[in-house]
Image 1 (cartoon, rainbow, N blue to C red):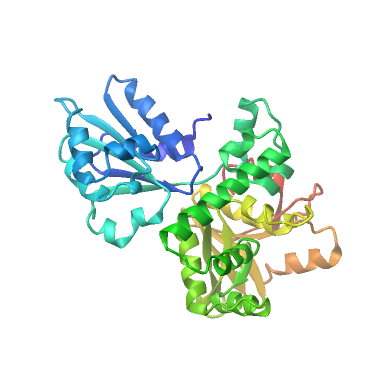
Image 2 (cartoon, rainbow, N blue to C red):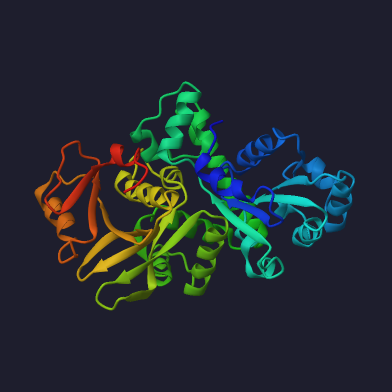
Length: 393
């Protein structure tokens, strides 16, 4: 497995800190691998490490609550600092109570979990000032390319546009096995995790709504527009219920909703936002007859890439034109437009006109899958394959 230095470099300064290191992210994004890579780094200095994986039923049988966890760890504590790794810790009742106690017993604690409730108010209030958090995501293309070379496989940009970057998906050598893996992962997250956790009774309605949401990536929506569409399909679901379902998907890190900002009002536009999938495979596995949604998947990939690089991202409404992303970092602002192709003259005019009246002190960028360079005197054109290999805008 590749070393994901982009993440580890941010965690490394806290190795010896008494702050609890919380590593979160969607299932199968590589959190456990990162925890183990951190442990191997620490072990090179002959330090004491203990790794407990709570996805293993045998471990959950031995340790099911805070008191049992504390008692188990205490057996491994001596005069040296103990580096404690608790994988998928949300499976343990009272894990936060245990961590509060163990950090006072000369332990440096690293925990991971696939549930954003790890960072919810009820938990972080108790851990206030005692933790730092890090979000892990599926592979961006550079990581997917590095890993594919490591396992001696070919992974093109066109593959990434359809199948995304869940690490284990790159190990699937046949298309059928790839689809089976991704569908099983989808079923685990959507059906096993969310339906069971929230005791959803109308599972058929929930699944219909989720399917619609996940094929609506990179589109402006509202809870009302989703409710109205479902009603047009003879599925009755209220706006408050849609809002709940959206929150469930965000909690499991399946989607992100990005606010829409208006240049006219200089403010956030309430109720409307763009939805992006954590990985574009969630869209592709729902595609009929292999008609993959490359246009919206491409925008989704650019969004995920900008987050990976540390940009703060919003959608920007420039009068009557929508600019896909306003990306800011270190005091610099970039306006980024994404289009699959601008070869067609009508599309070219529409996409480039989105930058009309934007100050030239702001760097204006358009990203397409075209091989021809469409840069102008004021607008930079990046080919997708080049953008995905860049480090900065």
